[in-house]
Image 1 (cartoon, rainbow, N blue to C red):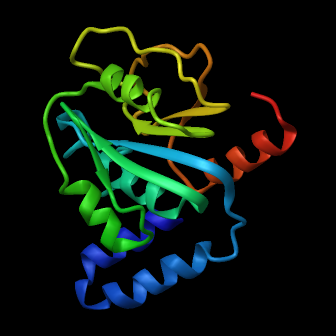
Image 2 (spheres, rainbow, N blue to C red):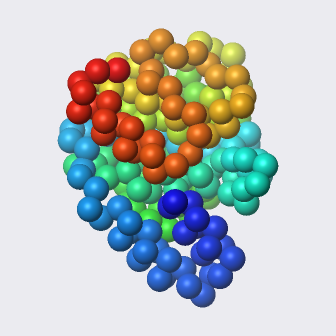
Length: 187
């Protein structure tokens, strides 16, 4: 699993370069998703210092950042959100994981992130979050042809689903699932 490379790099920092190469090699043969993909990673306080499971040493924001780092797209725009939206270079591997994790912190304006995404031209929207929103505003429906809400804290209550394909948990299986859904041409 890709997140194990991140955990290993934290445990043995001197091997980060080799682990990063292994992480990138694990995704290099993945066929890129077509069209423009927007990826939004929640960097709010509720994503920090809370592991993705009772037996994990990876917190939610690191899990989300790792998943974002392995999405292979023809054209990707990468954003983080908390109280605001911030665009980052859409790169792969360990370097982008740390950039995502360290990009911001604060409350959660999930509704604002989706509203902003809806103003951008894109084919696919992937939001990696714990689905908490501190604004009290209703999360709008997405406008993308395919929209994925990936909940890395699936035991928590979510914001509702409507047009979203809702995915709970965290693994590279999520990306395989996205390929399968889009190949079938349905939601």
